[in-house]
Length: 262
Ligand code: NAP
Image 1 (cartoon, rainbow, N blue to C red):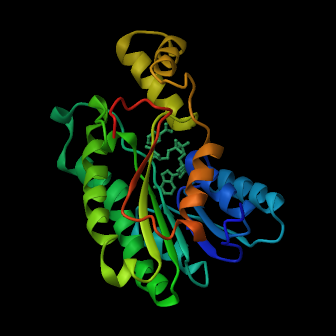
Image 2 (cartoon, rainbow, N blue to C red):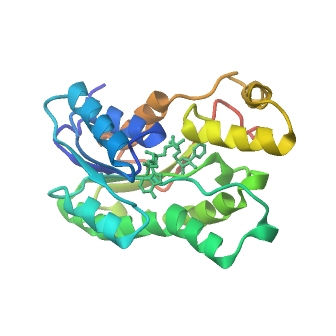
């Protein structure tokens, strides 16, 4: 299927590794020009080189910076002539116990996993509507549907974003102009983030890394972790011309791990 987004411009945030990189790869493969961001310059430049090799016909612009800051967002937004596709992403908050979290911990989580996405949508959505095409995908988490005990910062901040997006996506001045906003909810994907959370769980439970990883894997009906490529393919479809009648939705990609009927 040709996704019919060739020549569009995308901003893919937090994309030097993992799910963000998977989304950037899938969009570049479809002929989309991309701005990719991450804090670490070296990994970002290497990813950008990989993206250029994947499709030499597109422009790939790497912007090193922290997307959760005003300066980082300004630089990222300024790098493209305009943004047709926005993939919101940032690192997830640390695990822990809410009894120990301070107001600053909460503000950092809200900044990264709620307010940054809202700021980037604020900066881009009206331009998309004026041009008659826009696709926004927010990478959130399966934790929005089924909370994860130790990830209370994520459960809270991402649920806030989800509630906000449910309203925003349905505004006539956005939805009636071929601009869609959806959330893509990863279950367990094989990325650095999974390794870090498994290490933390192994340490706190006094179990081996492999035992914890295997238990996680066995709890998934498809009996494996997802790949960034699979995640990217779903993201690219949500950004495609074909997905114009699909908005305000939460797409859970978790290998069947969520046990509910809906
Ligand atoms: P990952 O493999 O650790 O990759 C994270 C990427 O984001 C890296 O490129 C990182 O580069 C960049 N990044 C982090 N903080 C950033 C910031 N403030 N500004 C700009 N770039 C930033 O993580 P992932 O697995 O792809 O996860 C992506 C998101 O999905 C996270 O929010 C995570 O919590 C969520 N999630 C993941 C899973 C999973 O199973 N993997 C499940 C549920 C939810 P730098 O460090 O160099 O900035």
